[in-house]
Each structure stands twice: as structure tokens, then as C-alpha cells.
Amino acid sequence: MKSNSLAVGLGVLGVVFIILAVLYAIGALQLFTSGPGNHYKHAILLAVLAVASFVAANFARPRTV
Amino acid sequence: MGLLQGASELFPVSSLGHAVLVPSLLHWSFKQSDPSFVPFLVLLHLGTATALLVIYRDKWVAIIRGFFTAAFRGQMQNDNERLAMLLLVGTIPAAVLGVFLESRIKTLFASPYEAAGFLVANGVLMLGFEALRRRAERRVAAQAQSRIDQEQHFAHAERISFRAAAIVGACQALAFLPGISRSGVTIGGGLLAGLRHEEAARFSFLLATPVILGAGVLEVPQLFAGGGPLGEYVAAAVLSGIAAYASARFLLGYFRSGRLDPYGWYCIAAGLVSLALLRFSL
Picture 1 (tube, each protein chain N blue to C red):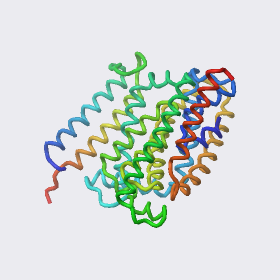
Picture 2 (picture 1 turned 45 degrees about the horizontal axis):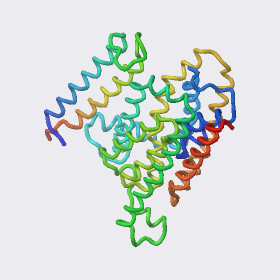
Picture 3 (picture 1 turned 90 degrees about the horizontal axis):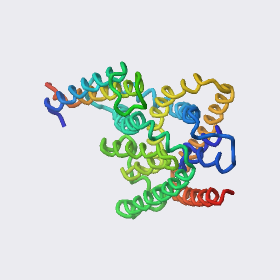
Picture 4 (picture 1 turned 180 degrees about the horizontal axis):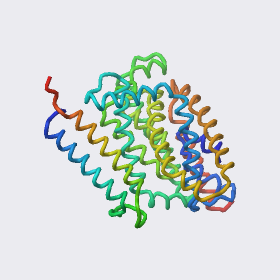
């Protein structure tokens, strides 16, 4: 399934994951955590999800050739 | 604990359930509610992951190479590239649940009653997976002369769909419940996705490695930061790895023609006996 809009959507999702990863890493986001502080596990996971989203976006991108 | 963990991790009988139940039943001085219990278990799992890395070392090199090649190209052109992407998709559900529900999951480790109950449920699941598989075999492999012929009608791990990989990954997340076997539910999920038993076991073992390694990198530093007998911890992890290596070799041979049923019956029996022993404080 290849389309530009899907690729853009997945790219945007990847950027959202990166922003969330930064917020967890600096301790500004506490959702689903054990308490206040820096949450590096959450940040690493979200960074991995961001990479997965960018990879999926690259797969979804229509080829010109 | 190392031998118990390593031997039971890859068998579809829930190592976590056994790690909670056996110390309680044998009155070992082991507190499952202790903050070091989960990092210690994860360290033992690292022994298992190392054994799996040794068994599949060549495959992992091809998978990692395939991942980067396909990711940059934006296309999958061979089985290793496809398998890399299937493993990525299959790993995400357990990773997300493991991190975001970590504190709630850890509270489940305290109760041997729940572990015994989930062990019975695990047995029922194994029997259910095999019942569904037999129905599929009646449809596609009716003329097969032997079990091995019958298995040839089912697929290799690289051929399953991405939706099926996500479902197998979601099954893997069930294994955070002590008593539900990670390898059992992922092998069962693989069977439902149309894989051969041996291929379902191979996919399960490959799928386990990144999650276990990831958990190890994140959890084990807590164990070493908290002090304790580091030599014993490392010795337990080594024993776990040796037992896991032997288990994996046995299971890959067993699943060429074997089924999940014996493990299903074992889990039901072990869970019920454990419940009875715990109830009557024997």
C-alpha cells in the first residue's frame, strides 16, 4: 500500500514520537510512569517507535521510477 | 534459579510462572516483591538471550544487515529483509506494554496464586492453539502420510503476513502475566498464522531476543547498582544460558513433528497441583 499521504502521515507520527521521547527524557511528561523524574526507558522506546515510523514512511513512499 | 529459568524459558511452560511458584512451594528465601527480583530475572533472561544469539548468530547478522538495507531502500527484496521487518513489527507490542505498564506488571509478580491460575490458563491456551491447528491440518493436509509430511503444507517464518506478525507480537505481550508462557503463546500465534511447528518455534525464539536484550539493558543496571552477590548473579545467568541452549536445541528438534499438547497438559496439572499445595500450605 503506497501513497504520499500515508508516507507523510507516518513521517509526522515519527516526529511526534521524537517530541514525546524528548519530553520523557527531560522529565516533562509523566504519563504511564512510576513517578516524577527523567524516564529514559520511555524515551528510548519512543525513539525506537520514531525510527519504525520513518522506516514505514519510506516503505509507503511511492517510487518515481 | 538460573537452571530453572534457563530450562523453562524456551519451553512453553512459563519460566516466570515457575520462577514465582517454585520458590514459594519450596520455601526458598526469595521475595518476589523485592525490588531486585525483576532485574535478577531479567539478568537470567540475558543468559537465555545470549544462548539464542549463539544459536542464530549467522541469521542475526543477516537480519540486521537486511534491516538497514531494506529501511534505506524502502523495499524488501529477500527473505532476510522481510524477516527483519516482521521481527520489528512483532516486537513493538511487547516493548510498548513492557515500558508503559511496567509498574502495574511488577505488582503481579508478588502472588503465587495468580501465577498458578495463569499457568492453568496457559495450558488451556496451548490445547486451544493445537485444536485450531488440527482443524487447519484437516483442511490443507488431509493426504499427508506422516506428521513431517503434514507439516510441509505450512509456511516458513519469512512468509507470514505483517498482520500475523503483529498478532504474534501481541500474543508475546500476554507473557507479562506470570504463568503465561512467552514461547507458548508466540508459538501458538505462529501456528494460527499458518507456520510449521518448527518455524513457529524459530520465529518465537528470534522474536524473544530483542525484547529480552532490551529489557536487560534497561533493568540489569538496577541490580548492579543495588549491590548484592554479583558473582552469584553472574553464575546464575551463565547456568541459565547453558540450560537455555540445551532447551532450544531440544525444542527445535522436537517441533519437527511434535505438538504443544504435552506442555498444555503439564501446565494444567502443574497449575492445579500448585494451587492445591498453596491452598493447604503444604
